[in-house]
Length: 348
Image (cartoon, rainbow, N blue to C red; front, side):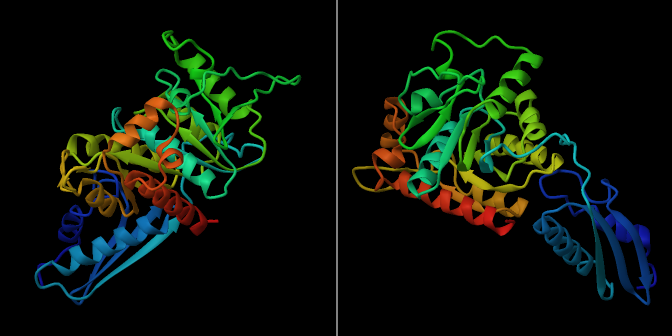
């Protein structure tokens, strides 16, 4: 193709988006060189990323895009993987006695993130793992209610907080420290201080997993967490409809920017199975979580249905996986726990 130029190739590559972002790889400056030799295309990319899935997805998308250029010869895409520069603080270290820390996050409220975090922690515990759950949502803590405890933790002589334990899971939440009707009126520095205390000054003992229930969004608490502790990965919770997926993408983008691996997507409130006839109703649409997981190149860890037992369990203080293990949602939560463990072990 005589009129094929490097500029035309770069223009074509603008169709390749960086996973989790709306911007393309050319705008991000990832295309370092383009050469045309006897009609064949040679492209060199430079990526600062540790997750090989992202590099593989970009490489594959580039190959498809270049192959679609009319009249072009064979395409060759070389990827130069570089050590990522992260905005996470050098102070992000492991918590003493805790093997793996998992963040459960969402871009917006109301998607059932705390329900997923509570049942994930409980499912890990039921699977034989020593598990803790830290409620990092200081403004809207719900873990105390979901585990049915109004106990107040006490401090040891060396001023370490002893967590509450329910159903085999060690718990810490602002809900144990304040009256249910009293709001937590906190500004930035105090938010950071409380979050760090929950992570660093709680006597978690020896744990295989510590699950962090993050507040919705991408604010002070999320940044404090990624700057304070080394995360094994993050689970992003969404519902099927686009309005939730838009915000889920922001949560995923935040973790990518802070060099935290996204373990997968959980689609909560996926569907409703009518108890009388077993008919499925896709109240919030269908397939949104699956499409988003595929777009981001991460696993869809599970699709949790809406059901009455899950809601009742959260209100009465016992996670549904412990209260009704044969329930459809419980089985899905157990599947999610197995998927999380599998993804973590891949990078162990």
